[in-house]
Amino acid sequence: MQFSRRKLFAQSMCAGLETFPTHDSTGKVNAIKAIAFDGFAIFDPQSVSSRAEETFPGRAAELMNLWRTRQFEYSWLRTSMQRYEDFWHVTDDALRFAANALKLDLNSRSHARLMDAYLELKTWPDVVPALSRLKTAGLRLSLLSNFTNEMMRAGIRNSSLDDMFEHILSTDGVRAYKPAPRAYSMGVDAFRLKRQQILFVAFAGWDAAGAASFGYPTFWTNRLNATAEMLGAGPISAGLDLDEMVRWLLPKLPGSS
Image (cartoon, rainbow, N blue to C red):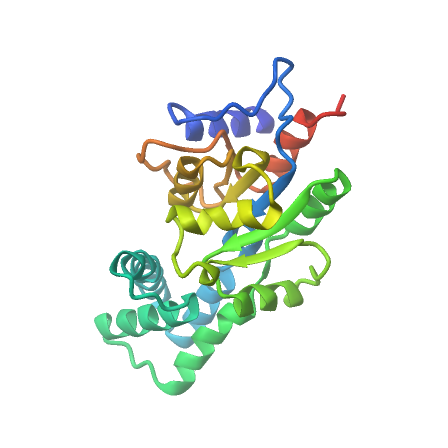
């Protein structure tokens, strides 16, 4: 019964969304040779919320909501304005805005503790087993994230993933944040593959739509059970975690029974 509920969840997330021709007549996903993961599909940000609750007891939920909203709005606005700053800077600006708006006393100590939480992220529990299975299957893996290189490499160190990813791709490299097409193009350039050969694994609905619009076959790891975005493009499948993605993808690869 649990599998049926998950199957219905994935179907509901993908209903009516654009798909891409990655299957042959037998149903094999024969084009996929590499996978690019968004940072939050790998690293669990809930520890930041815990740090916020420690810092501002009883105010964490409203702080995190406004901080996250401004964090991503600022990244998109800076791309549109052509006034790029890296994601660490954007995160800092968004935190200061949120604290000012909520009239919270963000002193130097509380500011440093909240920002440092982004350098202390670890993986979601399902990540290491999923990545190991994908590597064993011969798939090439990368991160493709708005995070800075320092933020991603800190997460990799915290979770002992040093040999897991072939490429660590920060949008700093093109000075434009996802969902700008030139941000997604970093995966094509790094792997030297066609976009149809790279599965993009998104954490956020807007990122799933952006990657799909760019031309990546996309899996939405919808860990928060969010509503699908209405942006005219979307994932070819979705699930609650990377275990769902692995169970969806591996049987479809060439050589699987």
